[in-house]
Image 1 (cartoon, one colour):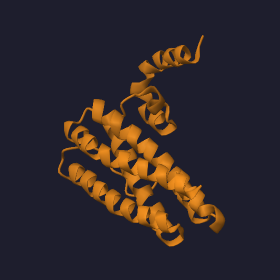
Image 2 (tube, rainbow, N blue to C red):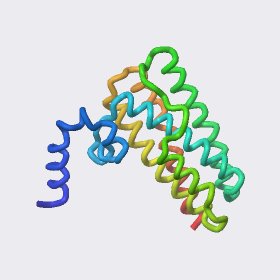
Image 3 (cartoon, one colour):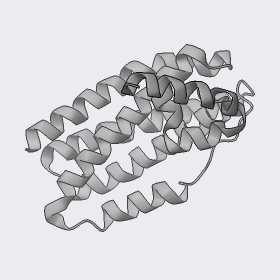
Length: 180
């Protein structure tokens, strides 16, 4: 069986379980690989956590990063603060009946601590790699929800936010190429 056929078989086996394991699938990245739309609760949690991580890691980069990273970090803080406020507004207005975390989960906090503790000679590499990875994940999350999400207001917001995230990914990838 070739690799693609194996993925299709795996996807078909997992489909009935997605209703039960949505959070596990989103957290582990399985949903992204399979192109499964996140639940509204997962989308809101992941979007909020991603914003918090971007803001906090970029605050560190403004102190420790290269000049290019400091410029990038300033834009990440501004843009992700804006999307955080928009998401909170959707939730507080009742347009999305979900819980939005107010603190990073353990996994994200560990990544942030590792970045904060990075040796000076490794910081630029670590921050750049973190930004490329985080924005790939965010683009996937927002693409999937904007195409198949079940909350019309959040779905619309995800679609409107997606181009900025795609631009952030391009910027992060360029920043990484320039660093090397």
